Length: 333
Image (cartoon, rainbow, N blue to C red; front, side, top):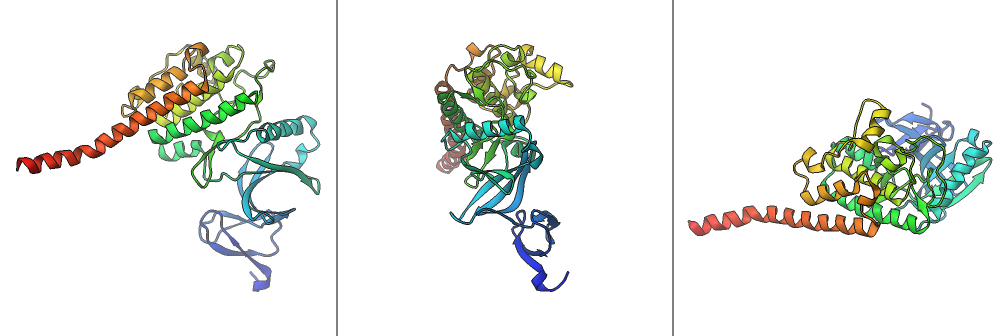
């Protein structure tokens, strides 16, 4: 490699090891970490933000973990693909997402700090949530603990309720759009498909969003309401809890038809250890007819809280049972 003055010490974002990388590596260029082989990036300054590692890449840009050198905090910076900057419709979608999200001040909605442009590069600075997604947890653990699922449900339902108060439907609720921060707090992201409650239906695909989590009324081209978002959240929680999506099929056509016509298998029939109360809550929120679901987020959140309290009582009783048995045996001796 060369002498030390041609090297730069950086910290691997994967294994947290300090390693030397070639000093002549271009900004955002990567080399493999000498310890874990994860790509290590040459940092790049964008105004006061030092971009340090890639978090995710998507259709309209790449999100980096960055350090704000002025406020001395970690943030996420989304760089818009340069080729999109000259595409008015793509930029309009990007602005719409940023503005929709920036209007919402809720603990469980990702915070937007600023939007700017520097040297022809458009970028968005956001709150950092780089501790994985609910989708990643399902993939890694097969299923997520019931208490965690209920907590996520309560918090994301609260986030959607606030969005509704601001006249917004999210329209793409799925496990991949729920991220976690360093405090394990779930954050709702990706308002790219969000629109006003009163907006006319768009002429897009009925499966705009993700077909595993799409509401029946959307498939039938009926009016979307907050109950459609609530259904998608129900599908998301069901998937996290059981490790299985509510409906599956070999083709997209059969899958969307299942949302409309196939009866739901209750969560505790898929996984017997799921409590009856939680299973009942998910069955209600996944009703085919929107009018048979919870008719407000408050009602849905109360039901999730009740399930949570019941689960904790059950777990406490199971924890205490062996102690009671041992005391009884001692008394009998």
